[in-house]
Amino acid sequence: MRTRRRSVIQFFALVAAVFAALYYFGVANPITNHLRYGLDLKGGVSATYQAVPSPGAPVNSAAMQRVMAIMNYRVNALGVSEPIIQQIGRSRLSVSLPGVKNTQQALKYLGQTAVLKIESPKGKVLLTGGDLKNAQAEISQGSYVVGLTFNARGTTIFKDATTKYLHQKMPIYLDGKLLEAPTVDAVIPNGQAQLSGGFSTLKQAQRMALLLQSGALPVNLKVLADTTVSPTLGKAAVHASTMAAALAIILIIAVLIIWYRLSGVVADMALIIYLLLVVGVLWAIHASITVPGLAGLILSVGMAVDANVIIFARVREEMINGKTAQASVRQGFRHAIRAILDSHVTTFVSSMILFFLGTGNVKGFALTLMIGTAVSLFTAVTVTGVVIRWVADSGWTRVRSLFVG
Image (tube, rainbow, N blue to C red; front, top):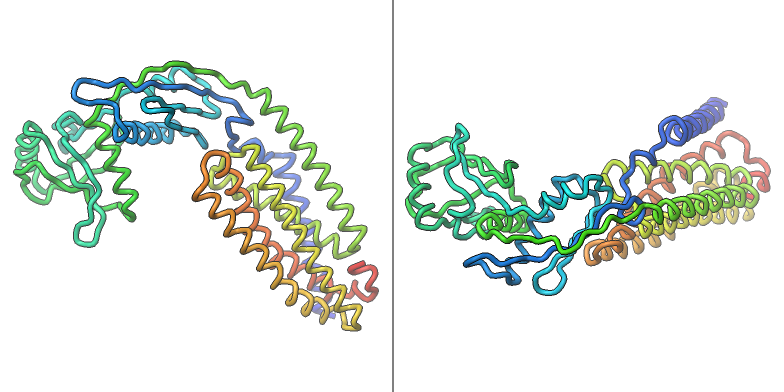
């Protein structure tokens, strides 16, 4: 009797929590207002740049890689979600920035030449990117570092600076933003130094080297064309997708209740919790919502429903074989979770491959599918598995047709 009462209280407490969450995140403070949207749904600006060579610095593949590195750095500084930066031909770049309001300011900021500065502890500029000859990622004593090589003028200045500011910090800035503040450990007379600490992977050290090199190789960028992308198409897509998703969810909720009775109610609760968790994760990681991303989300919803169907089908088979509700739930869930785990793991691995090997919209699709698959497995195990046991323990399952149809 005590177990039955506790199960009933837990079930209705969860129902109340689900309705409260729906009201808050759907009506009082819609979470959709806090999500980031891609260029296809929100609009923004798209521009084409021409790289112009400067004396002693021709435009080649290495220079274009450095330009793209600094552009990515600046776009992230603007807080733009899911930008698209692509090289066109040998010396052109295409940049698309979703959600940008001040188009001219953004384009001007992106097109400026990178400015590298090494300052004294009191903020006096000692060296600039023009004094840097080379920067490359290295491995020193088992750690990832960035090796710096200065030109003749920079070597002299750097020797004097390291002598004067021994055991003090000499901050390094790129475009006014602090990149590194290394401590001078010894006088450096040969114009070579290392940036150590903070690099957990070789890729991070390589990125830092590219950013530093971008200051040493000024590449002028000329805007050839810029276009403001209207969000009208995006609004139409959002409206159509919202209507389709709402209709699909309503039909799914109705079919689950009609076909699986009380278990269908449990599945609907799990589906609502699943949707809230997925949207919450997308908001927490500042992911951009695009049309391909919505497709991945809808596909993962189908997987979440499929997981519940597998569980209830196995539970119904056990009850048909004459087992009690509690025993049927235990055995049915144990057998169903194997198939659910297999399908979710294979989908998750496939989406990971798409995410790491794909580009642009493919990444958006893969990310939402990957998140949705992980959350679907979580809700199948922790929500559906637990709540259906509460229902079985509550005594509402004496009639099989009312429990699982």
